[in-house]
Length: 267
Image (cartoon, rainbow, N blue to C red; front, side, top):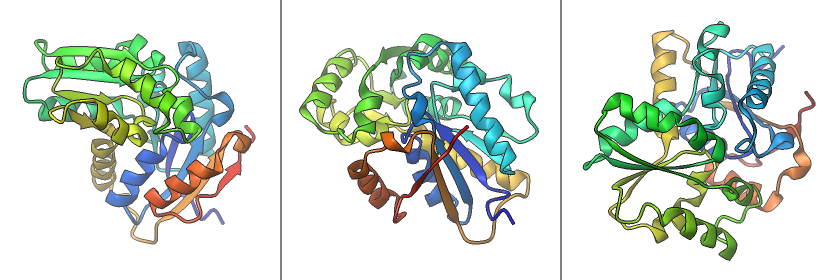
């Protein structure tokens, strides 16, 4: 018997999507979650669109094989590579963080001057800028690619001198020009304290995972697919050897899931 049938499936390039797991756990504590970190192919940011499609569809196929009722693409970089096609290619709902993040930033931004910090692939796609301009053609958007941050988070170096230097460099383009900043990669909320220490307190940080989790709940309510049982969590990585134990311990405490046990997934 598959105890995770009817679960919510999630995938990301690594452990960044655990920030989405955290918000889903808070908003939907009774749900069963299956999470995949594609650590063997980390990072996704520099990869071409066709390669991202191949990797994403492979992960989606595995989750569908597990009988999930909904899939969350917990990866901003994969989103422009597979949407909107993925919404009609499969029978279960599949949603991602970009629309959620854009909407949250737009409605909470006072001056409509919004920054986006994300991976090279996400910035190159222009998906956040497009989503924001669809909400308001007059909005001002500044985007900044941040290569190296995903790898730093994966190593657990969220506040190391080298990471702080990278953040100072990337965030300098926003200073004095925005009132709201979208953390356009699910890895970046782990860097929130460091980002807040560099930017003005007047800059509001947006974690798309919060609104995304709310949208997941609304969708499950509409489909009468909420789980009334006990929440369960299953974690997989395509290369467990790349996971850093010190960071997993820290993330485990933040999620309230002890232990945070990743199993090897060979696809």
